[in-house]
Amino acid sequence: MTKKPVVSAESVPGEVLDALGKMRSPVVIAHIVPDADALGAMFALAVSWASDTCQPKVALPQGSLSQKLTFLFDWAEPQVATADDFERADGFIVVDTARKSRCNVGETLWESDWSAGRPVVNIDHHATNKQYGDVNWVIGESSSTCEMVYYLLKAANKPIDSITASLIYAGIQTDTLGFSLPTTTPSCLRATADVIEAGANLTELGERLCRSQRKSEFDLLRIVYDNTEVLAEGKVAYSFASYDDIHGAGCTASDIDDQINIPRSLAGVRLAMLFTEGHKGKTRINFRGSGGVTVVELAGEFNGGGHSESAGAVLDCGLEEGIAQVLPRAIEHIKKF
Image 1 (cartoon, rainbow, N blue to C red):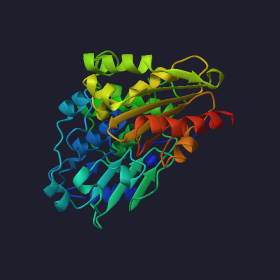
Image 2 (cartoon, rainbow, N blue to C red):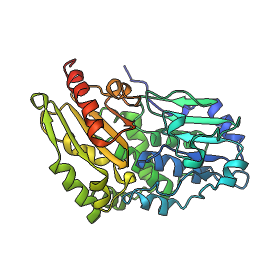
Image 3 (tube, one colour):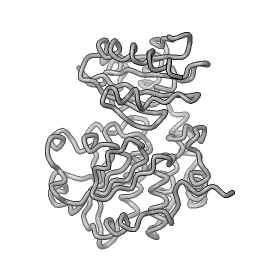
Image 4 (cartoon, helix red, strand yellow):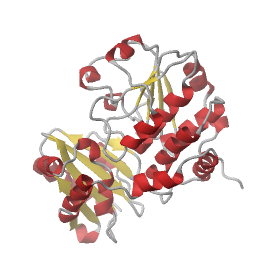
């Protein structure tokens, strides 16, 4: 029996295509602390959707880009939305963002009703998505939002040049951890093959994403390695980096993401966590599960969310207090598996 594709051009809802087709000056938005999937989806959609009758802009407040991923912006060269662009926008396209409160619109707009009755199209692959859009296309089984954007562009007969192909590849490759996660489905691999054929720059992407650590990033990795601890008979591992650690290494909150793979990489670990205080008084937790351990429920205990085996949360407290709150719950959580 042939398994139905998770995503395909034919599965793109007509209402999504209709809503996007009516927009002339949309702003495309991703989540705060955007990763390669968020940036790739946002930039690919904005660049490929642009035409004589539609001029998308992207929401990218200052400080949004990590050192590692700045090259994606340089490649795409998208038009960045100003405050006036938000006011003039006739709609918003939000990608890879499970909650409207997580939209990366900048501090001046976070507390406001920035959409103000204008249509919001919500495109995402997080199972915990709150369906906050006027039009929602959410596929929790998709490998990435970039995979979904690829099929959306294909369904809309939009051009996919080498830059767009590279942006989409970056999102798929990183969100599947180099095609090693269970979300690496046939439809994911078909999309990947197609963007490679379209000219995705695999050589440069491999260098940039996997083999281009800056000294500041390398110094932060050393801190995370040094701070890694193992609990619960080797089933739980965590690490942490304080505000002073992060900024002393020459990094910022936007540079925190992939470091979770350090405690996750230990043999026997089924629940990994990374605690970071990129902003004073705010503790961010990255959760990862493996071997059948799900973490989205654990993140939900702290008003977080994400995917079954990859989730996150932010606590309004310092690092030590955050660790003290979460560790006991993590140890209880692993006992369920």
